[in-house]
Image: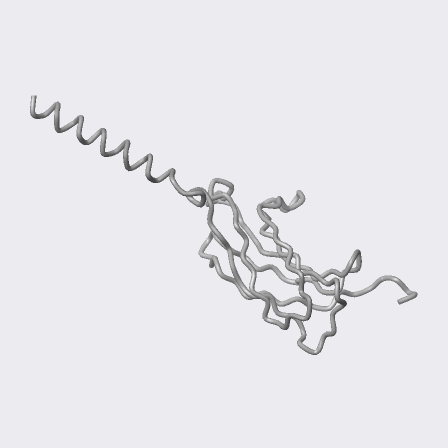
Length: 143
């Protein structure tokens, strides 16, 4: 009888712990954060925004899969620009490779972009990353 009561108590404790783990809106989310740098001497247009993306870049023969994205109005902000990307924990697979990519755009004009990979989350990569954006090369001969 004591053994049955003990087992019932353990079962109730486990159920209660599981229910508590599901409480809170961020139980299934996590974040990647960091700082974005671009040349301080740059004068950005008033409508410039920083767009930062968390991408699954595991497949080399396919487009990257967007996991999370944030857009930050720059409005006279100076670098470094802090960012945070919230993502669903279940979207991350330990065997995959993830990277942060960023651009600065004004309207439909690309001004700055990352030109190298910034791995995060898996394979020993960090959750916090400093990224550098380089001036975008224009292909329009009239600019």
